Image (cartoon, rainbow, N blue to C red):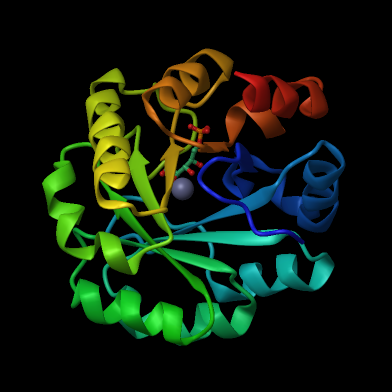
Length: 222
Ligand code: DX5
Ligand code: ZN
């Protein structure tokens, strides 16, 4: 698998919107539909107001196929749980700047483990909060909904943050992906891409589409 750069469009269906009674088939369906990465949303019921799944699910997906696993940790103590997600087969691990940990140290440990490192910002968190860490990351996730649930409406007020992240990257010769997550459909993907995002996480609009391959292609071309 050739690693993606920030100049590549990446479509990452979120497993949260899949049918959990047949996870392996759902991942196979996403791959057949043209998914580049699988986005796995881990929620602890504390950092966000929902509980999803943990390392066992990541491992199940990992054992099913070799698609790139983009693991989004919406948990209060990513530093504590990190080794379990590495062992489960994550390729990229994203932690929130708002969580309770030494962010620089967690990012350092993610890379040391052989995974790529991502940093996530909630919609209310300014781009400036990420600046101290940008040389340590492979991906910056700008949440386009308040995390916790799939199927929410896209928050257009996040677009200037995406533009700021892209401008900063160009000015400083950095190469992190810019990922967006929440309310991504063809139209919002186009607006995010225009602002500088290249990794499109899409749950409802892919897994729940009548034709998943068409939905993935539309988001890729948007
Ligand atoms: C939100 C999650 C998202 C979510 C996206 O808390 O981080 O990844 O699954 O779902 P959609 O695409 O349905 O908004
Ligand atoms: Zn997510």
